[in-house]
Image 1 (tube, rainbow, N blue to C red):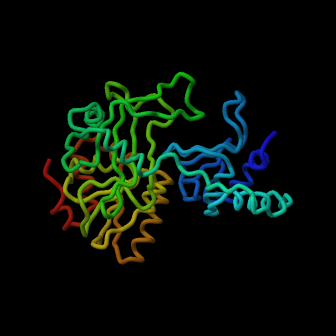
Image 2: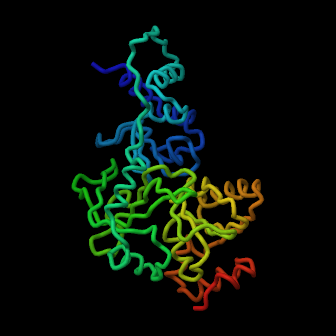
Image 3: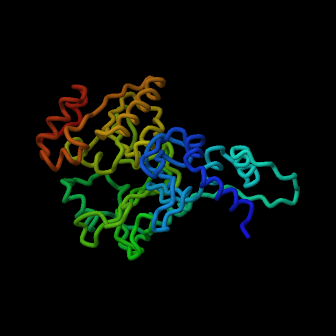
Length: 348
């Protein structure tokens, strides 16, 4: 016999799209899925909710997975997170209101449960980081070199783990390996404390990303934080992906930089007190445009100038691999303020 919570979760799954439209209103439907930034309704596309059950029976309606963090759950978790609930009682009461179901009589003995916590905590992230080693001489460095990223000076945030556990998603095949080599990147706050990690799983020779559904995932406390290269300063660069910023650092290695790990998290990065001008290395897609707009609005309110850096192709790593360092330097130099081009851009 199903518990009351399981019964309500099943009923919510029967109305999955309506639940998403109400509690994940910053997302949108694409095919059989609802896409949004995260379970707390941030803009973006990292989290997907299955709206209808898959034909093979492997995917159930109402189940969600966050491709960045690897977290997953059901629609009760969505309601709990979006409403900031602390107990199961609050979440079930809210779900009954949404479904127009009668409320049960109050009972002081009713069990109370915290809403489902993400599996990747800052403590777990710090343990993984401690178990990894510097990136120099590893297949993670080999992988980056194949993408034109040779200079890793100032990239202490990047490390390597030879056997990093991978949790399969509904989109993975039944024979996917449970562990792969991985590039590990430390996510830190403004004080430099580790709050999470980003993992990029790789083939065993470093030639490409691992053949899994989601070779990139982050875990821990990500909102407002990021992967930092260098310290802080009056002039900084922000971007969505690690390779985007590393590509720029091949031609301008000294300005402090931060990678947000996703468009949604890029839009939410916290600004250091010393920051006066922020270059945003955006990806050429709708999510990148949205992140730029949000960052610009937030920065202007604090008196920070925002300058957009636009790639010629889809992102700056594509530019680096297609055009080489000399042309990338030329394209970037034309977009920098003159004083910054003279200060930061290196001769190639």
